Length: 289
Image (tube, rainbow, N blue to C red; front, side):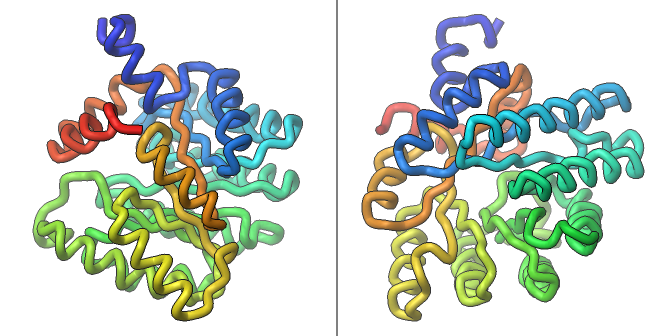
């Protein structure tokens, strides 16, 4: 009912680029024309059987082919549970390995997204293993969430391997023994990790809509003489489009994360249930530019 209702379609059209591959490719072309690069995510996670996992991987293969054929400035982002991690860990690694190998041939990139803390170590182990395979260096990266206590240690290990990182604050509900609970602590850790990444000499993504943190990053880059093309800011499709445009106009790199797919309603409900603060975040950005 939500997916077919007028308000449901309005919400999905603002934050999600439709349900089909062609929808997200058209959205990517539009965003590219504005000077932004793109990361495409087919919404879905925690598949329940191998057939669903293989279908998800096939769709990503199609995306990589279409990105190359159309000459789009885009790459892909996926979750291991969408590739069947909960069903068969070996199958999930095999499917993701095939996608990374294809991305390497096409000079593209695969971002293995981070999920809740039960998956953190398995995700990192998978990315380290994939990155070590011949031909994959620089073609696969992952995500670090600044609200986890372990993140600084994880960053050090990823940087030692030369692995690209997308730094975000984190959207899952986690207990105090695992994650910082105060926004100020999460923000402080984000800024600390952000500066480490910016000085690493590896191309990373700073995923945030927090204008204060963005201004801190810009000031740090200028003060440390860090080239503007040595990292990028990243934001969600449909959120702070005004700020996205301003950053590009000022010469900063900007990548827009564009989700699509039939799973948009479960995706929203899980995010809102896991972290009620997300309700206010989405509502606030629904009515702004």
